[in-house]
Length: 472
Image (spheres, rainbow, N blue to C red):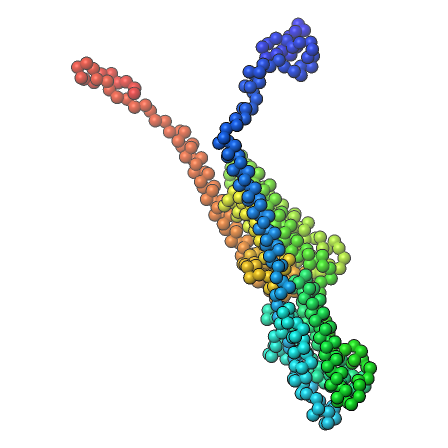
């Protein structure tokens, strides 16, 4: 009776007392081979195939890394020698009627004075880094501000007001209370904060050197006009020319500028992860419901990720822009990226689709004007104008800081166009794949139901006449 409750070995015999818990079974080597995995056969063709796969995958991964490092470094390689164009706008100058007639004939006319004290000396110091373009059609400050704000003709605008030449002459003559002549630099930091910060620092260094040089030259001219050395005054202490910095769209926190393109990268990676996760969702009942389930899941995932990414700046002080507008913008960008990555997965499969999506992540990061402004990059990087990433980053800066706000509609249309185009490819590809899959299942079911009866042929007897029917 006790033996009936004991565990038995494979041959039906009770286990030994040395194994009271039944943890070990007496199994022969032949029986282990039956249930174990097949042995590894060290055939040459197996190892060759394995090594080929390892080498191919290694080359693909290495190529992606090499592509990124070359794009990243190449985009910034020659930026120190690339010339940026600054526009110069000059207001109609006031005449010298307030000065004695003897002085009026001794000093150059306003246009000549501006050329000799500003345009020529400053252009000499800025050679090779900045170029000056005279905007002869810009004669008012409002038009100069609009030109600088739009940033389409020139990078920034240097505005010379109507008092420039008169203030210089007053300073040369030592008129009491004379103030330095002033020029106004109208620029937009938010257009590309990293590059513009570098440009402004370089321009400031050039301007200081220029002002010191012009100060020495004007001091000699003042001594010739008055017959005595210039007297210490505000004009000479501060310098004969003063710079007014007018940042049209300042950036309060550089971290928010960083967020304008880091959010794009994070959402792109989120799109890859979302597609990878939703591709594992299966509905065994119907393939259409399987596709709808994936679509709804991907949309909900992206909405949650966009919300988390968009609210980060608004959790910190001194934030700029509107949270609702930023959330709506990043939702549009997130959906575009979701459709973009889905297109690769649909056309190329999971592995190749993920590899190509990663490649475009590298390409988008270096051509979207995120790291280096495209204006000073190699001409190759201008292909970013054809990708959605450039408009996604540009639109975010417009929403955050108001930079080039008039182009926000263009940015939205570009991102929407990419979204619609990728969705059309995904829908057509999914419908085609679904039709092929359903067609195969219908064919298999139909084929399984078709019963072809065996053929029958009459047998001929010894006399050559048909006999009984038999199956062949």
